[in-house]
Image 1 (tube, rainbow, N blue to C red):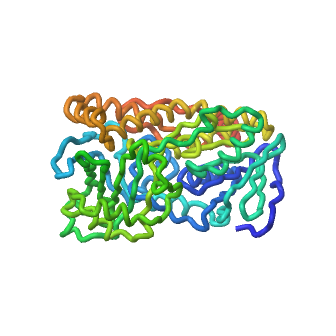
Image 2 (image 1 turned 90 degrees about the horizontal axis):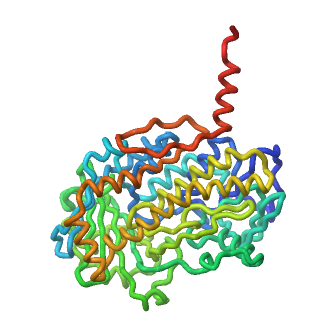
Image 3 (image 1 turned 90 degrees about the vertical axis):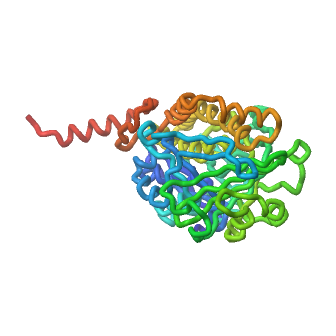
Length: 471
């Protein structure tokens, strides 16, 4: 980590951009790996003093597993994951009220959906990045940009310069705040982008220590046993998923009333350890299908690995301006109900890396055009997943009469063929790095075509001609 009060602009060849990545979350880490593969220089600036990933379950599908497969990361991730193609829904007396299952998922989609503890993916991605690329304790306070470059100023007084600034710093992005402040000063910020994120739920999550399989049935099954329990006539839903090492990832979701949205006791903008004892006491007697209560699972979870956050959602319209671009939660915060928040964030990283790779020059106009291309490619797909996550939230969390009615119809009257059609459609977009050899299509379902890289094709042809045997 640099101790200098400022960093001069990097020496440039006039063609290859120096990228400043703010945020060492999943999107930022994956972008760093991709830029490294493309031989594009970058640095990562993280406001925390160390990477300490919190949260519980993650579940990824073919939409992003294809890119991880291309990068050679899938096999390592599968070693710490379990296949997960079924979700069972229960009432609070553990009576099964429905299930969502994709039979023959791997044959149809080409990949199993996999479930794992979130820190496992953080550790895997971080291990592929040189330690000197990380700069910790760097909270962005302001940004500045012009035709020659972009600069960030951090809370410790340091400044850093580059050609492109990527805000991958989450829902409360300092980069977004800095960018929107500049746009507001120029009267160019859309009114909708100045509104706060929508808060409808609060969530507490954790992952247990290794458990005794004799006490918790199903822990040693080859597939993840996933359960969602929906409280009757209450604000609560809770879930439990088995993951490798005989652990259980769990969460509790509270649906907030309109008055509670602004209640200070729920305010918390960080995925970090907080004083959760009041909520723990409220849920400790809730039953789970693992022959235990939520209190039992919480007792087996280190307190510093339990976190409580709002489940918020907002799709921002302005993703970029000048040399600055937003990805992941900084641009679009999705409810986790459809399991697509991390997927869309990492897809952003893939497509943005492709657009940066295609740059012809470091002129601001070329960079702006590349960032617009990124948004054009990503926005329609993100919008689709954003809408799906809102609908799924009604099914898996909802407690109003209308939401219970939707859940009843989905579980009892929606044909399996329609469910499979929705799954296939939702995983058809599978972006890969256009500057690396593509992974062949897997599965029987249709997949959207990959946008080819003109530069990569030209370089491949040049290499072919250079090695061709003269006639």
